[in-house]
Image (cartoon, rainbow over all chains, first blue to last red; front, top):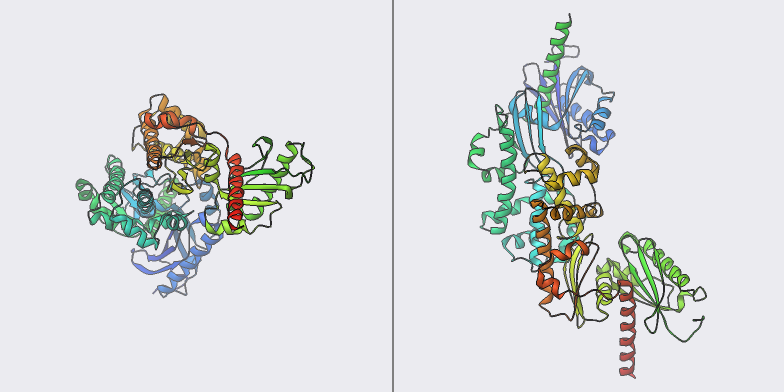
Length: 305
Length: 305
């Protein structure tokens, strides 16, 4: 049992995303003591919201661990946040008067990669609402894709949903032949004609389109040739992300993101064969990040002594 | 010279679009007496803004005609507005306590078609910021496309700009080979790398992408194969819009919209051969619309008498 002022180190890992912030409390043996979830923890949604969510999720994780007696300033925090690859957001979050003993800040892809591989070296291909490829080998980072919607993020949930919508609108105009995907999309949106679809999708963002991704796979699995060619085009892009990352020979490569269960089996067999299951979630990767930084700080202090 | 209270009819034509509202004053002989331009006249931007712009542009057209002595309530107005094909906006604009003697409300495609052909019967293919096909033959209207950005409007300026951006981002990631279009796009955006482009385009709307359309044609004309295939794909869609409309055998078909000068020569030769120059702009079409409606009202009154 940890008590306040205990000499043993306690670590907090944070994965702050656009819809939720996940926290984990771990001890020096990397044992998980407790977890917590709060609202959006992504500084793209505002500094106040992000710092509030990080603090809340940390308190919830401590409570879950039965460590209400431990104060936040006793935790060494690894904080992984979407958006902090942008210098302005990195600086803003670094300047935060945080409540922790120490805080080490990383972007979300790095902690995802560290979590997946329990190591500095590895690669991830991600297809969720967005898509990208990322590797970190000997501290050299490579980022491919992840440019956003609608201009990037090929092979992501939002991309699949948008392709389906485009195709169905073309077929309702008689520009291309309708396929099974039409009926599935119209049913999903609760629409019966073009005007209703256009009203339903006007101004919608990536998260809306990502909810339509599954129906492209449903249609493809029913033999819909149009859906099949969308699935193949999306899978081919994710294949190329993987191939580009594999050039650097990462020790491991994993596929992450909400579309993984649907998309993985459509990737080229040689790519599928090289994919390893992710070992831990990003918030655990955030703890590894903090521990790596601490160890490095110690090394450089020893060198200077 | 018209004077207030004159028995002769004066007509006002309005073309209310997303960026400006154009007004024209014409007499019973269809002679143009004056024109005026004001701000956005599209009720999608709000009722107050639209009605203000319509009134302002009308006053400016009267002034341009040297008819400051004529009041708005002496004008018979044909008002063509983007968006009033949606029932809610049509009802809102119809309920306007307008300052004119009479007001006849139409959607923007109908007045564009009436202006282009000086008749009820004809078809138009449009490629500007957006794209669509429209025909009105014996008062039967057909609308193809025009579903909006990014899910529709293939072959439009916004679509061309988006395709170029996607392609350049893929090539900067090394996913496809770079072409001439890369340098042209980077120069146009004043960017040198992926991060700068992604920041420059984040959250941008159709009008932003439409400004990039010309560079796709520039690159294609320099022999860039990637740009060429984008131009051909966009042109093929506009070809199919035209072919679908031609099934109904319109007396005339014209191509309209800001991208016409660049795109027209890329259409199939048999389509190009069938295109007629538009005879008048949409605001003149709005006057024709009002005159047609007046004539029809008169006919039905005579029948009832």
